Image (tube, rainbow over all chains, first blue to last red; front, side, top):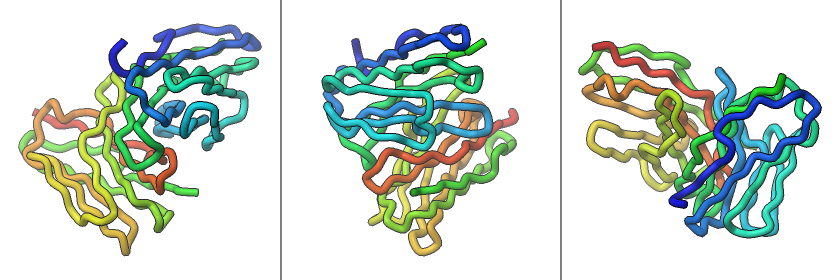
Length: 113
Length: 110
């Protein structure tokens, strides 16, 4: 692994199903983030983690949960998917929160039908 | 919390002309202002950033200016080329997760 990796790259999901998007980084970054990207709305923060063991809510957290058991991994779970969660999801990481470059994963295109 | 407004949402320029994208922010304590470029189907990538103790920064054809009093910052691209066509996002942070503008789709017409 080099950098930050997301899986899967794309997924079609039936409404009501549970889904976990995976994100792994090997840069030993303390901070990690989940954003969703929707046309015309830019990148909106879902959840973030300043360091392993801590998480926080972003602008659009409802329907999503995260965990940060270790430095490298930051999975995003949709407990019961709804069509409005159809989006492109980007995971990102940075050495510390806020004032440093954020490195983005390649994105996960999720379609909820 | 922070709110970032970005204009215009779309911009078309002739190859060789300059392009300017403007952003305003609401939190006067914000101290970090990066710009990201996202090509079609790709991830956002940092192209330039500026901190609150600097008024202007330049990197080849790209420059960013910051006006802390007015709470706005701008991206300037000179001598545009077709490969500059992409969506550009500004962002702001006060040692918090980045808050992004809604993006500007730049088209450079050859």
